[in-house]
View 1 (cartoon, rainbow, N blue to C red):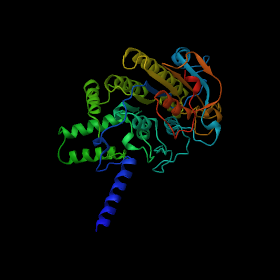
View 2 (cartoon, rainbow, N blue to C red):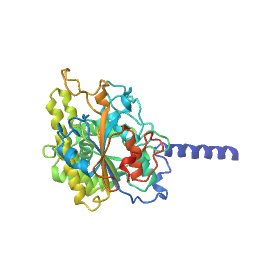
View 3 (cartoon, helix red, strand yellow):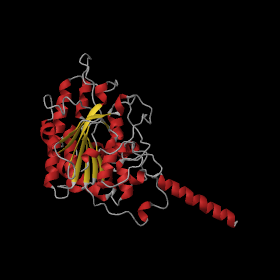
View 4 (cartoon, rainbow, N blue to C red):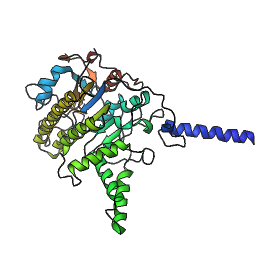
Length: 395
């Protein structure tokens, strides 16, 4: 009997420990245990995904750029890697979700949509993201690590943590997006009694459906009170109808500026994506999207310089998710799904304290080097990242 009891206790301890490692809720909540992680005192890092896929020609080429602030001003403040590529033109899909996870994990992978849908990008990383590395190494709260995401790419809401057994949901980041605001708002309206009877049940079902998209964390993590306060401020300022707040990538810039004021994230990634509207067939959607991101970059730099928490203590890494095709004969220009060489050709600009200024690096480097470079700045190990740090950007 004693042996059986000991065996049961051993099994229980093993099960609970495994659940904790997997990032799942258990009876022994990690939040209840003493936090032995040191406080984070290093620089803040902002990863700016110059997203939606962009070519070098329309971004860092001074003769053809639609991003003059980036090309003519920001490059003087930091180190520009002109010859960054995605897996040196091998069989890696060049798209937004894949590129985002390459940046966050430092590892290439042939991702598959977990729902097995056509053109689906609901991916799950096998190795940790930089958010997980930071939060496991330091006492950094979930809302102090952020993904700021676009409203029409819901799949990218959920790149905040990996499936790695040593990391997972306990070390994930928070997400800011219009989708997250809609979830918060609907929940608040239900709690405030806006509906009753069949309409209330319909709204509850709608809320459950929206929450079900986050199936890996549902019921296992709780939103921090500061996130509730953040969205309450947003509602007070912009209302609930969606007709006043900015849209597209302008919305992401606004969310980022608000997060700096009200949440003070230590590490965030802002996923710009407007150039991808070129899939509708008009090349002006592409070039206009680049200009909107460039304007956002200027606003973010101004915000950093005006805020004592970020001024002289923030490293920015600007990197595209993928390139774009340069075939002039296709009916719809600037595609990126066909594996052409230019869709693998990107760049990275890094600027901030400790980063050499007005420096251009011509040697070939890889997109997966971003994670280890962030790890260096934040003094955290990124042991599953396969790309080496970008040493030229380290003083």
